[in-house]
Length: 288
Image (cartoon, rainbow, N blue to C red; front, side, top):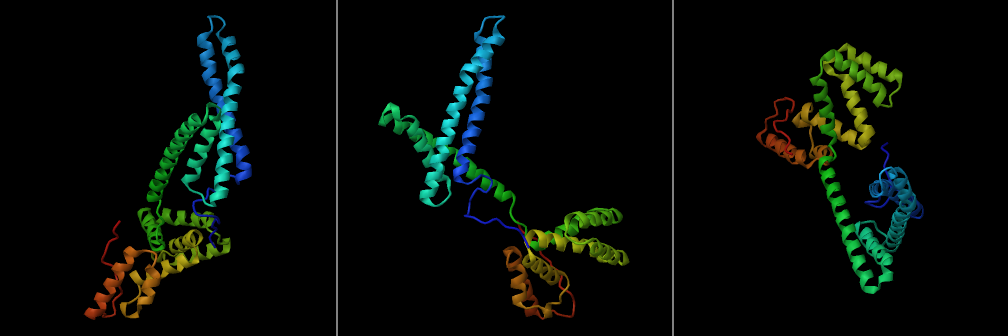
């Protein structure tokens, strides 16, 4: 059974829950400020010191100013995360508006000593900056999502077959045996039985089929495996007269590209009454 994460859509599971993430962000921001301040003020102190005393000048500048910069970063990070958690608690949702609102409140709070006008201006600038960051993050997520679309189970099974066809027969068999042991949950006795059956007739590619089925079940679940098996049978082995539209709908429900073409192909075949007891062979190609 596939393992899934539970939670609200878009929830960041890589971070700690709100009460503890404040401490984490404060510590991370403080460390970043100290490291950056050490580099910046170390170089600046060395350049501003007379020759022969640059090392001591650099160390003195680091000791005097790096902790202050680290504290400033830590206060900003902790305050921003506190507002972010508060906004999430009030709105009961997670989206880019939480960070934008938290940025506005953080900038306003840090500039409140300059008066309402200064605080409002700082809040707007900080909110815009956080909005730009969130926009870039959303854009990157969409680009990555486009490049990592889920692959239909039938395509995954076919991909295993194509990969194995590209490798020499003997080396492919050795690779499949290794993959069965390392990538599946089959017992050693089950793997040996599969390899024995495969050795009797390598043209049937029993081991490769078992590997594809096990990987599909582990990654996509039992329901996806059933769809993949039925789709493979529909495309390559079952006779047209033995098919029903319910079977086709179940097999290709998750892949509309194949669903439309498979149904049209079957209807045309039924209408023309071209049965003649021959197995169905697809005459289409997948469109991207």
